[in-house]
Image (tube, rainbow, N blue to C red):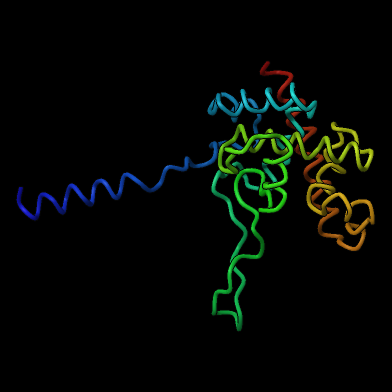
Length: 192
């Protein structure tokens, strides 16, 4: 084989390794469209609802807020002096934006050692597990998207302390999650 042919084959193999993440669904404002476009999402949401009791619309609204349905979502970089990158704002990653420590705890407690944050079935299972913890520790109903989101963002101890009360912007975001959850609930009734 010529060097040129080997180089082209090598380049094609290298190019095929990247870009395995799909773009998010095309219409994030329509739950029926999301589930029709991504049947694997529908299966994942329903499986988590069956296992943990968290309604599909609450899961969907939370994932929309956390990652806009991007499997490889990450927090932005931090910069020193506005130009020198110093790592990311947090270790949050994937559909659910789970932090490294919380994700590791989930894997240990559920026995799901091979779970990946960029896999929708694992992300929804994590979310169901976390939200049932919120219900047990903080008394938040699984259908209460607003308060589930506040606890998801602030952590169980932060939510219990009411740390979100000093964050007007976060309360606004939680209200948007609640509104989107209600919108998705109405839409899901028409596409089932």
